[in-house]
Structure formats: C-alpha cells, structure tokens
Length: 186
Image 1: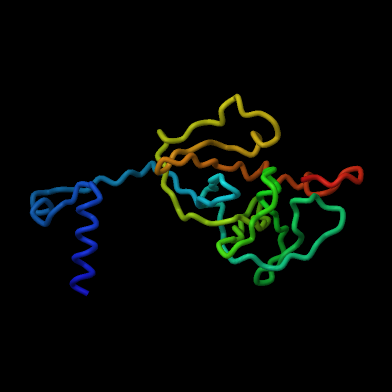
Image 2: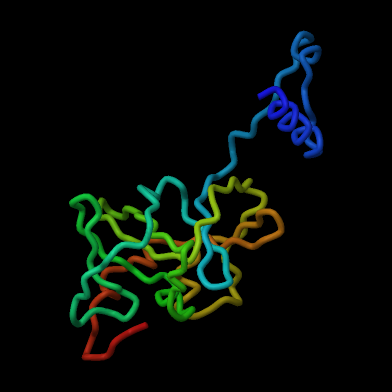
C-alpha cells in the first residue's frame, strides 16, 4: 500500500501540475478549481471522436438485442428493452453517414434521454468523461454543410483531438425514423 501511494505521488509530481505541500496549506494555500469546465462523455464512431453532454446520458451499457421494426430508416436497428424501458436503438455510424458500427468488443450503447423519451445510441467505443473549458469550444464552421452539419452543436479540443459535440435534438429527430415514400434512408 505504501509503495502504491508513493507511485501515485510520483505520478502527480511528474504530471507537471503544481503540487501543494503540507507547508503550503499551513500558510493559507487554496487550490483553485475551475467551475466553468463542461463535462462530456466522449466516444468514437468510425475514426472520429464525438461527445454528448454528461447530463444527457442516463446509462452506458453493452450492446443488446434490438427487434427490427418494418418501414423504418436504415440507421434504426430496432426497438430494445433495458430493464423494462422500451427505446429505439440507433446505429450512430449509419445515422452520421459513416457506414455501419463496428460492433466490436468495445462497442457500447449510450442510453440518452430527449424530451423524456429514452434512446439507445450504438457507438464503437466510449473514451470516457472529458472536461472541456469554454475557450476550447468552437461553433460549427460555416464551411461544413449538408445534413451532417445539423447534427453538430460545437467542436471541442481535448488532448490534441477535435471532438464533435452532437446536437441530440437533430440526431434523434423522430420524423427521420420512418421511411417516407418507400425509400429507406441511411
């Protein structure tokens, strides 16, 4: 146990962060913690990194069976049941026009809630919770056009990666779930 604590202390010292000592606290040191950081659950779909607000996530679970529903869009895998809650299950890769989800060992379903309705979003991998300061966030550039631009709330920078923050209201637009005129959408 003592060796483990020593390793953690050494890792903290090596991180480059300012480390307060007992002496600093005796002289009135107070660690400043930023209150304006926004928290997101970051995940990978294809080769791109995406995120949704941590407040929109109810649960993260392994991929579960979904029952196909006829005359629905191609990105809608079907209807799933998680502990008695029935919800549409969406292949987020298809919804975003990136092909099909990999459904590998790291694949997960993000259970989100929008307008008090649950939805399951299948993603290739959950990266974890990231905290992004407002100065690292940007609005969607005007050069990004088409339907996919509607899905983007903002872009964030975290650890050298660009993370696309999704606009759930657009991604989960119910009118897009039903096939119109016999044509199956991607």
